[in-house]
Length: 405
Image 1 (cartoon, one colour):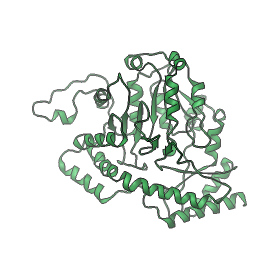
Image 2 (image 1 turned 180 degrees about the vertical axis):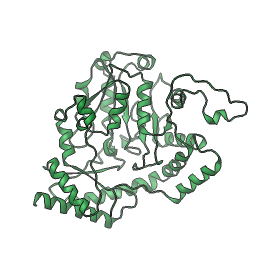
Image 3 (image 1 turned 90 degrees about the vertical axis):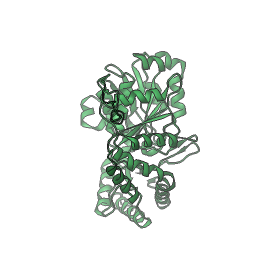
Image 4 (image 1 turned 60 degrees about the vertical axis):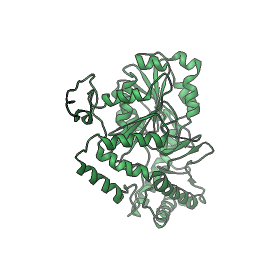
């Protein structure tokens, strides 16, 4: 059996967790703070706040920016539900737009057409770890005509004076765009460290702050520390200082801090990320590409260009010209070979909750076309060349049986 994406936990990570358990400090503390600083140094952004999930990070930033009922947030139709759910939690309206056919990422021209006086945030998604067109997006929100449409509500919106770009970078830690890593590409980016991500903390996420002046990212970091711990003005580490027990609640905040147990894993994973994890994932991508490129029916995913370099998170193979039903049948043949594949993702407008809100996948033809032909192949640290050949042979068998080629 070849699984889809099992985590690879080293003995060093296990030892780090054990050491943390024995230290007497297992919640947010010195390990989490160290992880935050090392993430900022790696990504090149100003400040980083670690949390218990990327979803929490997205929601916290929407709340911080004052997004509320009547506001609109633009996002790709092709994403995981979390990107849209957090908008719904704010009482705001998700405005889906179609994506690029080649790289699955949000189409900038479609974003432009979707901007209204109600637009507060654009949430691009670095699909499969491949960065979006950030130069174009950053330029778009700074155009005079687009800024003139923006109706500010609250201090942070007034201070920014334009639509905020909140990047859903759940897939893309380590990816690069024009020589900069994700996290330093736009106003703010949010990473995921979920169990199936390239860099895992079992569960976890991080907000990478990268606002320009007049914002002070360190001050925003301090504000978010309070917001993500019930609105409490002192965390547990500060309260443990002699005579410093007294605290106050200054807002009705969230509870989504990262623990030192999670950070202990993250620190080890980050230390080996560039030297071990990314090269291994690149090897797997390149091997799949070498084996599949000879077949006319194989649409190889875009994962490198002159400006962009992926984080090698998902290998999103497409089968040319097939229907959704045929795709599912091909996947069943692959499963019969004891090879586990997946689809990323069922587009949000196709999900029951969002269909009931009136969204229709027919309005996003490229999204549906990409979805109906896509199969995500296994990519994980321990995947061997023999495993890769087994996967590819299973895919070939599936295509041959279903399409009679």
